[in-house]
Each structure stands twice: as C-alpha cells, then as structure tokens.
Image 1 (cartoon, rainbow, N blue to C red):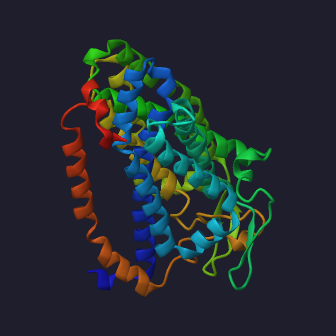
Image 2: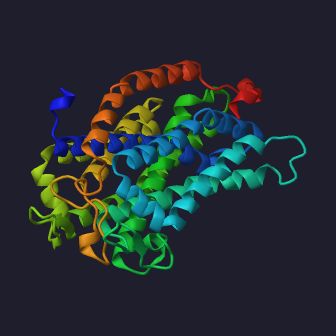
Image 3: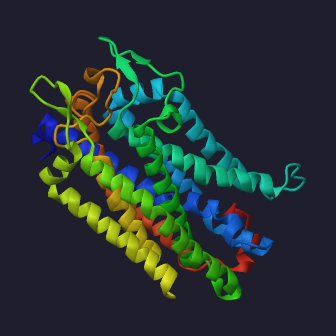
Length: 383
C-alpha cells in the first residue's frame, strides 16, 4: 500500500504525523503547567513534595516528545528545520535552555548540601513552565504571521532581524500580539491541565486544603485562558494568510486564508470545536465537581486543538513557514520536504509507532495505577 502512495500524499501524511507528535507535546505540558502552580497550590514542604514527585515521574515524557517532534521535522521537512533552527536560533536556544534548567532542578532540588536552596530550583521550574511555553507558542504563531528570513538559490538562510526569532514575541507589531496571545493561551492551558493532572494523580484525602486550591487554580487559569483563545480564533478567521496561487508554487497574500482552509477541510473545524468543548468539559469536571477525570477530557481536547493549529497553516496550498521579508522564500510541505524515497522509508518505519504508543500507555498505567501519597514522597526515583 505504501508503495502506491504518491509524493504529495506522503508529504501530507508526514505533516500529519509531525502534527500529532506536536499536539501530544501540548498535552504533556501539564508538567510545565503544574510546575508553574507550585507556589500557588503547595503551601507546605509536604505539599511541595507531593507536587514535585507527581510531576517528576512524567517530565521526561514532555522533553522526549519535544525532541521527537524536532527529529521528525528534521527527517521529513529538513528545509524547515535548517531555516528555523539555523536562522531563528536565539528563540530555540532559550526554549531549550528552559528545559535544561528543568532537568537540573528535578535532579538537584533536594540534594544534600544544596548551596542554592530548593527555592532557586523551584524558580527554574517556574521559568520552564511559563517562559518556555510562552516562547513555544510564539514560535508556533509564526506559522501564521510569518518570519523575517530570506533563502538564497542554494537554500542558505539569511535572517533579517537581529533578535534571531525572539522578535516573534518581543517586537511591537500586530503579528507579535497574535504570537504572544497564542503563547499565553498555551501557558494558561498548561496550568489548567497541570491542576487537572495533580487532582487526578495525587491522593488528596490527607491534604483537603490543597485539593481546594488545585480545583480553584484549574478554574482560574481556564478563565484566564479564554480571552487569549478567543483572540486567536477570531484572528485566524479574519487574518490574511500565505497561499500558493499557481502550479509554479508562487506565494501571495490571500484574504481570509485560514478561514477558507477551515471551509475546505470541515474536519479541521470539527477537531477545533470538539477540542474546545472537551477542554471546557474537563475544566468544569475538575473545578465544579469532585471528579478526578477532568485531565482526560482536557488532555484529549488539547490534542485536538493542537492538531488544528498545526494542520491549518500547511494544508490547502498554504505556506506553513512564511517569510514576511521575501514571500517566495516561504516554505510549504511541497518545497520543504525530504525526497520521495526518504519519506517512503520513513513511512515503513512509522508503522512501529502504534507499538511504541502502546508501551508508553502501559508504562503510564503502571506508574499511575496507585495515586501519589505522602509516604511516597521519600521515593528518590521520583526525582
């Protein structure tokens, strides 16, 4: 069957696979969201130990998924990888730095003779959960608003802004407002998911005050995410996009491009609406009832919303990494992908993905079949 797939189909398929990995990463940012809630929901060292141990058993999954996302893009769309990581390197370096200090914090926060003290490492965890996710959202926002680069005839990238990608969040422009809004939505959504996960994963019977704080934090952060979500959705419906207008691959500005993409792919609209409904349902179940299952509704909803956000700027003849400086340098799934042979071989390898996912699900179940209790916080494997 794979042998019969044409080149364009494989290009669409691999952008879908990369988007699935990216959307799973957005779900796993409940770790970062939970970290940023630490000082808000944990008032004692015991409560901090519960939060850190609960999240500490999952943080590797988030980082591994981020690396897998980058690796999949490198293999399937190498021109995007070289253009973005080779030109906008300051934003990616800063994002990776926040994940490095996250790993260091879990390792050294409670080490004997810690000269910095635990609060320094807790602050590092907060940086990873706030600044790191904000910058990831801003970087994804450039899929819609464009970046400042130019490609030569030999595909050498020249970045036309001294901030090297950080301008996505730091410049004073309407596109930066969109990027920041998307980043802030991801930050507050991650915090909402973090509260949902901690309610689900920790045995809160011994710390009822902490349970109340977690459920309140879930609703507060969900409410804070709504204005940014609304701004992003409305902006996508009315903004002009970067469309392929002829068979030669010419890129031009197209009015209401992303709205037309939704109309051309109604299933994307279904994913978006279904995802938003599930996120709302998860927040309501966690904040307004005694249920502990909100994370599964909110998590699935986040995956569906993430899929829409990542697929929308690539399908229906759209440039997924547009250049504001030189429209014809913009990248599409057609001019940025690997060769047909490479994609075909990778597609065979991708047949093993369901088995890997099954293993991850089993390990997750094995770790979480018993809720985290106070006596478990002395388990050094949790760090």
